Length: 258
Image 1 (cartoon, one colour):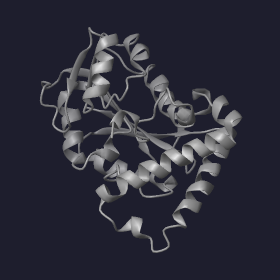
Image 2 (cartoon, rainbow, N blue to C red):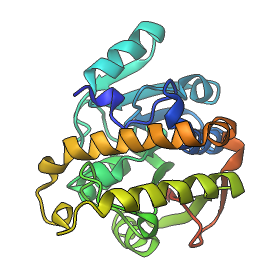
Image 3 (cartoon, rainbow, N blue to C red):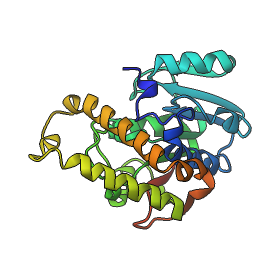
């Protein structure tokens, strides 16, 4: 499976991914007003926010585990510093290197999340800031086999306080349009889960679930697009906003200062 086209790597090129793509892109729009100096992005995916980040950064460094996505980025951005690596650790990067670190929708994929946070702190300059996002656990509908752990606000606060003295956790929430999209999505997923009458998906090893998860997730997104094309197409990044954390927060937006 080409991870780049997994449902877990939201694509700017797949129409049925639009609601999720815009939600992720909103985080980049927010962080583009906050970053400065030397910037590191951990888990850049297909790199759809590179142009936005380059406008604000003195230098931009990218790290991702996907060789194919980084090769494509290198063709269009040959002057960027790019490392292909699984993390943690950030083996190619020296201590106290970056003014800002960005890592969106990554921490839930990291088994050793404490080492991941330690590495972010290590590569930040004193006073530097890291910006993380992760799905808000309270809105999880079904088990995601790509995720080692999903976090509530309290859980994320607890683990980040172990490594950073100054933290702030806000939330990214949606509009009436996105609420309708996610309601439709929840209804469809609930129908699919009813097929698993013995709740086997809750006990199987993660690797056993990846292929069925990908199949049904992609099928569901296509169905949502087919039956709600106008709604999916008109959702933009402006339908998402940064606010104080609440139960409406779809993603947790975490600011950590070294």
